[in-house]
Length: 115
Image 1 (spheres, rainbow, N blue to C red):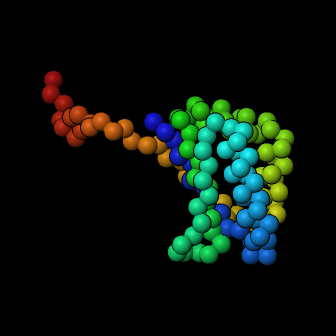
Image 2 (cartoon, helix red, strand yellow):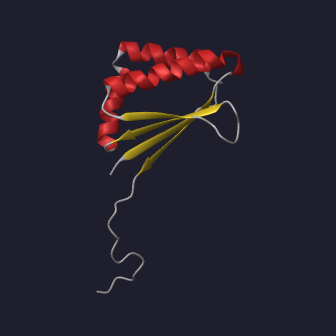
């Protein structure tokens, strides 16, 4: 089952262009150097400066492995350090982790056990 990491954050209005440019570099770097896929979601409704990163991993173990690789990578740390410290509103980041559901039907869900 895939693991989806959904991160939302607000880009500072005064650093909007720099924030978007940095975000695009982060996406390009992560998609090119690590084994997972990143998408940037931009708002259609809601708060105008709230953006999201959507990362898809093959599973929890793969997410942990890729995170270790990313945080051992000096170039990546430089990219995200600049983004977190200079481009987003402090305290605005929210991370949620989801797991995809299997396609098969779950048997006996909600039925009493008979012994």
